[in-house]
Image (cartoon, rainbow, N blue to C red; front, side, top):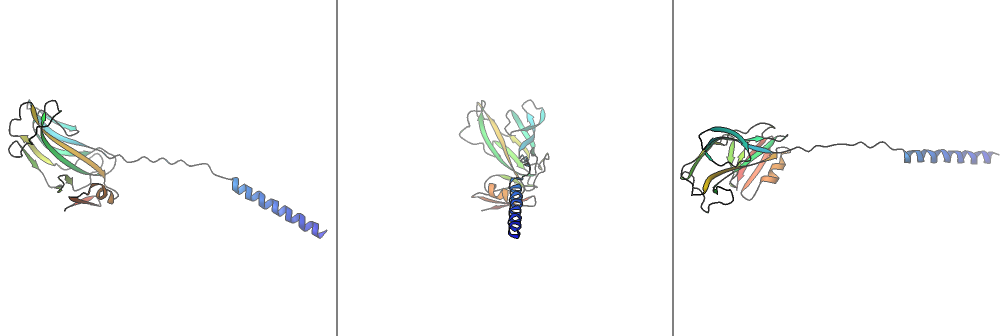
Length: 201
């Protein structure tokens, strides 16, 4: 009789244990969906232009403007939603009026055109880029890069002077991103706490 009771008790204990195990195996929670919105990094050129008719306009553009006699107060606006470092390439050419060709001989500075850079917050790398030394917050402007630029000599027939401001932006955090993306054979770029250090090789 005792043996029967012990056997029955063991069977009941086993069944309870299996039931608990199955309950644990088949119990789960509802999935939690996490949505991540990546930061947007972008920029635009802001400049004051004196047009062919001597009217003055302030424009935000991609950086290519024709039919002007001079430009000034060239700045870059951070149009993204996160703090960013900014760099600029300044490309000067004689461009055909239809925009399809470049004159073989490049315009000569101080002969064909003049350009004045303000270097308070900017430094030029050996790679030719101008780097803004401070990160720019979303919606804000860099300090002025070009205080004035103007044509000094008539363009070849069928061409105009093109001063193209090619700006690019990159997130300023984490610190090592800018160095990995912008350092090159000529210039080492280092970011630290919102400040750029440019070392020419």
